[in-house]
Image (cartoon, rainbow over all chains, first blue to last red; front, side):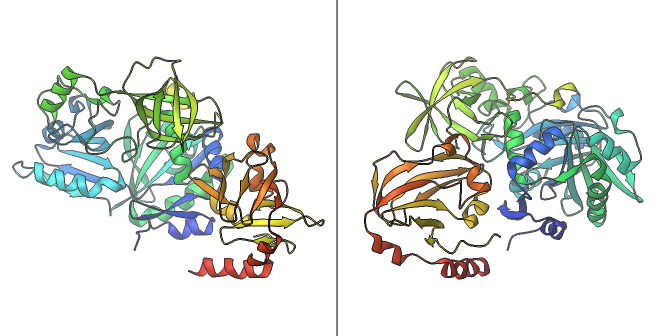
Length: 365
Length: 133
C-alpha cells in the first residue's frame, strides 16, 4: 500500500496523475511535464516533496559526529547555513547525497532522499552507538514544499511576512506562520531562485492553500515529479538511484567538489584517498544529443567502435528541445568531443557540453 | 475525454485503424486514451515506405518525456506513407490523435483482419474496464 502525503486530495483536485515513487503515491504531472517545466523556468512553481526525510542529530557531540559521518567539511557550516554533502560507507560508497542544516553545534539536520531514509537511519544509528548524541527521525513531523522560480522570493516573503531577499543562497531561518515555526531555506533542485520550506505536518495543508491562493497574482502553478526531473537534469544535478548508488564513490559520481580529504579522518576517507591516487574511475560529463534521439539510463556510449561509457540519467530537455544526458565516460572527453550513444540498437550522435546545460537564475544568487 | 470516433476500429494496445472508403488502404494511429497516458510526446520513430508487417508486429515507437512505447500494427500491411510531420512536431499526436496525429498509411494485406478489432462501443467498454481495475 503506497504512502501518500497529507496533500494527496489537493493533488487529486488539481487533476494530478500519480506515480509510485519510493513507495509513495506522488504527482508526476498536473497538466503536462513540458508545460510545468517551462512554468518554473519562466514563472514560479510549487512542489510537494513531503516524502523526503528529515533526520535530527542532537547532543554535545552533534557537530563532530556530522563531521565524521560525511565527506564535506562541516567546519565550513555556521548556524543558519546549509551544506550539500554525502554520507559514505567504509568503502567510500555513497549511502545518500543530502543537505545538512546547522542550527547550532548541538543540533543539525540531514535532509535525505525518500528512497534512502531507512538506509541512512540504520547507518546513523549504527555509527552513533558509541557516541553521546541522539539520532531522531523527524520525517513524520515535517512536510516539505518547494517554491521555485523568479517570483518565489515575493511569494514566500508574503507567506511569512518577512523579506526573504535578505536570505543568502544556502542560508535558512526559522520563521513564523500562524503561530507555527517554518524552516525556510534558500535552496532547491531546479536551478531557479527559490525556497524549500519545512512545515509542521499539522500546518502543511494551510501553507499549501496559502501559497496556491496568494501565489495566484504571481501565476504560481503546482509542479509534479516529472518536471522536477527534467529541471534538475538540465542543471546536471545528480539523482540518487539514477546517477549513483551505494557502490558509487563521490569521485565516480563527479562530486569530488563535496569531498574534503584535508578535514581529517571520516567514514570512507581511507578508501577515497586510495581511489584518488589510483584514478581511472571515469568522469561524469554532460552530453547533448545532436539529432532527435533521447538518451536513457544505461545506454552505451561509443567512440568509433569502442565502448567508452554509459548514460547515467537521460531525458528530453524542454528548454533546449534536445535529448540530454549525464554520462560516465572512461576516455578523454573535452568539451566539444563527439560520441555516439546506442539507443535501442541505433547509434545517435552526441557532443560533450558544459554543465549546467542551461543558464538559469540560481547562478545570479 | 473526447468522443471515440465511430468509423474506426481499435486494438487492445490502443491503436486505431481508419479504413479508406475505397477499401484497399487504411490510416493507423494511437488513441486519445494512449496519448493521454503517455503524456507529452517528444520523439517518434516510424518505418520506411514499402516495409511490410504482420498483424501484431512492432512498427515504431512513440516516446514521451518519461518513457518509450512500442506501437503495434493491428492489421497486416505494407507502408504507403509515414507521417513525417511528426518527426519535427511529435506533439501533434497529443493534440489531434485521431486526425493530424496519424502515424502511418498502409495497403491492407488481409481486410478480414479488421473484423478481429474492436468497434467504437466495444473499445469504449474496454476502456471503462481498464479504469476500474
